[in-house]
Image 1 (tube, one colour):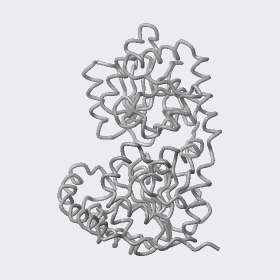
Image 2 (cartoon, rainbow, N blue to C red):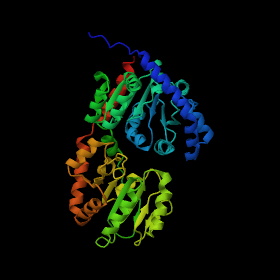
Image 3 (spheres, rainbow, N blue to C red):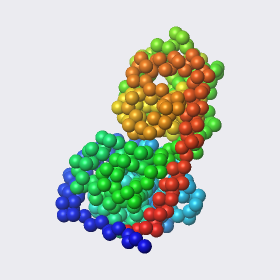
Image 4 (cartoon, one colour):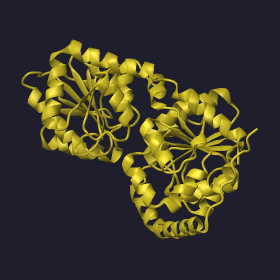
Length: 436
């Protein structure tokens, strides 16, 4: 019988590096507080209460000993939802607390779960704030989604023998090179993790290269394949008075809205009935995009005001959170944002799960394996600029059967790549029996 590996012991240089980092955290906190008050859009929680949570003063759950999930923002909340739903079904009496960094993430937690889970904002990464968080929640395991590793958070969990599992773990080549430069700070974090569930081969290889112990590194593949299928909907968002081709541009960033408007405007002489639905990624940009539409004298409506679309409406601005999936349901063609803008590209599986053909720009490093699978199977087309975007839109608008075939191919990719959810749940379960 083999012996378990010895417990990790940080070196002196690693301890000093974390100490330096902790000092820097306290120096940055005043600026973070100013930014917090300026950008606070949480209408259900006062700024004072949110600030208290940022220092670890969170509400104690009715029962302790549950799970603590950390999801940075909306994308991570949605990605983790299939895991959380399974845990709620299998362990209905086990409390779950979700922390987010952003107010939009907090709003999504409330929309999805209501009072089924407890929400708190993640504290600043000081040792004292993280200690208070853990002492109040007393989790039996901490689950982090995708990317967000905090040195003091992991250190406090490690001190208290609380297993931490990083699920759907992502590690781009650029991030890996950055972490290698601060290995004295980053390497100890890897040693303090119970498991890393890599979402793709690139991510697995990068974590292995950075020093993650191979026995704790699992290639689960991407839970978004499972999550996308689970979150499909038949609920239509818009009421149209006539049948029209619909292009839905989801999770857009500046300058993607302008590029889309220009591309669609080129197509209007040939496809006069085309309807463009713009869904900005961040709510603070709703008014910015509305101003852009008004300045260009484009006939548009906001979904917050009406969902009944008249024949002369050219653009719909979806200015409400949590409705993107419903918008994709009615799309003939889906554009996934953050890909013409250099943001790494957002989730292409949401429209693919609904059998919609997908267009993305060249910046797709957040989910390269997913995009590669979809592109190889003919479900996703690359558009590097406005000209190529117009070409792809024209092709699929003119040939509906070709667009349908691309959408069906995307759905098949999802069906063939499901299974990450069960592997992820097994890692979480194993972490509880292999502490230390």
